[in-house]
Image (cartoon, rainbow, N blue to C red; front, side, top):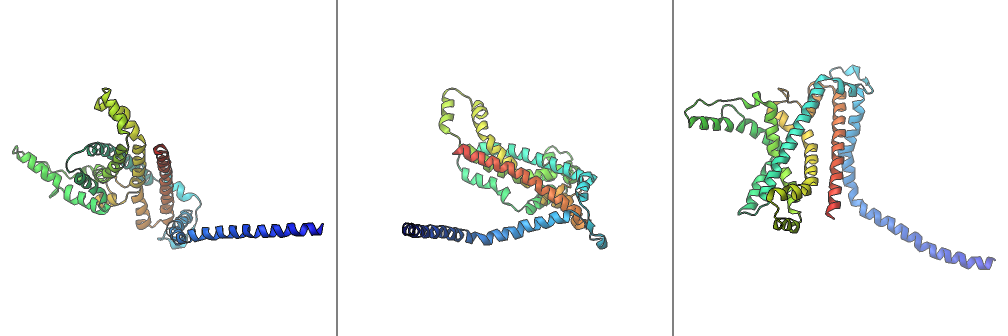
Length: 319
C-alpha cells in the first residue's frame, strides 16, 4: 500500500506546485495592475470620503463656535432643526423652484438649439462653438457678467436697449432695477443662459444617433416634419432628455455662485447651499450646517443614482 501511495503523492505534489504557482502569479499580476491606481484611490478617500465622514460626525454634535464651552452630543437634534427651522424650509422651497425652473427652461431651449444645429448650413461648426461658450465660462465670472453688464440699472445692456427702443418713439424709457424687482428670475436667467449649452450638447448627440433610414422612409410615406418629430424624434430623445435633466439637477441643486454673486442670498433667493454657508460662516453653527450639508449630499446621491441608471439603460439600448 505504501509503495502505491508514494507515487500518487509525488504526482499530486508535482501537479499541485504549478497550480499554487499559477495562483500566486495571478494574484501578483492583479496587484501589479491595481498598484498604479492605489495613489488615486487613497487621494479620493482622503479628499472626499474622509471629510464627509467628519461632516456626518459633526452633524450629531451641538457645536457653535460662539459658545465653545457648550459643545455636546446632540443626537438627531440638528436634523430635526433642519426640517423645523422656517429659514431652512424656505431655502428648500427656493432650491426646488430654482432647480425645476432652470432645468425645464434650459432643456426646452437646448432642444430648440439642438434641432437648429442638427441642420446643415454654412458655418455650423463656428455657431456650435459660440453656442457652447457660455457653459465654458467660470460660474462666478458669468454671474458677474449678468449682474453688472446686463442687469445694472444705470449702465446695463437691458436698460440700454430700453433707452434705444423708447428713444425711437421719443418716449421716456423705464429703467427698472432688475435684481431688486425680480431677484429670483434674475438668478434663474443667469443659470439658464449658462446651462442651456449643456442641455444642447446632450440632445444634439441624441439627434445625431437617430436612425436616418427610418426617418427618410417616414418622410417618403408622407409624414410631415411635425409628425416625424413627435412620433419618431421625441421618443428617441426621451432618454437623452432624462439624462440631461438629471445631470443638470445635480449641479443646479448645489449652485452657490450665482446666488452669492448676484443677490448675496437676499430678497428670497437664498437656496440651501447658501443657507448652509450662512449657518457655517456667519452663525458659526457647525452642527446644523453639517446636518444640512449631509442632507444635500444624500439628495444629490439620489439624483445621481437615477442619472446612472438612465445612462446604463441608454447604453444598453445603443448596444
